[in-house]
Length: 196
Image 1 (spheres, rainbow, N blue to C red):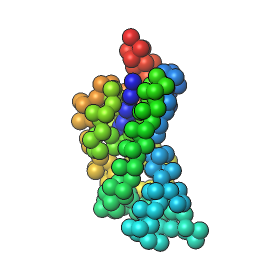
Image 2: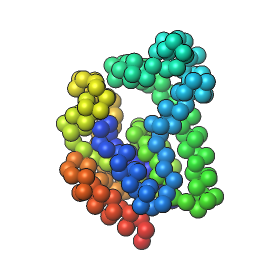
Image 3: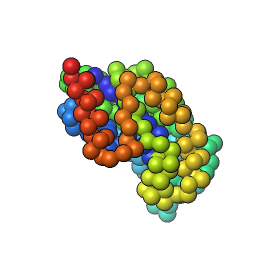
């Protein structure tokens, strides 16, 4: 079974996805980490990035300056869209390879994909789990985690699909706005349902 975990920025998708994978004995894939690998020097995403933006956002060694790029992405929707158009096909290809491997090994796959619905990939999965946290909680988490301003996070949230719309289109919704214990209890309930 292929399970996608999604939610808006700062909702706590990673905690839920990792816990789901552990409890199911599943392969775990984080689309953001795949993007990170694809942007390593000389990787396919890096080559396409340099072809498009040349030395802009590169440090002295030719690596992408991730802090500068993250700030630019938060501030510039056009840049974010162009970068997604480079990375998304490569990430999708990697996901499809993983799905084939898991099917062959008869393993579940849990894939954490922030922009699942925005990319239109939801139909490629057997189940979709949306992790929910209110906007104010998400903003506080991202400001603390990434050291960006509230306004930058609000801009990032504004271009993502509304969390309530994601929830309506999902098989499961896990509220991650309260305690970790409550979140893990909700994860257990999803696992129990998936295993029946």
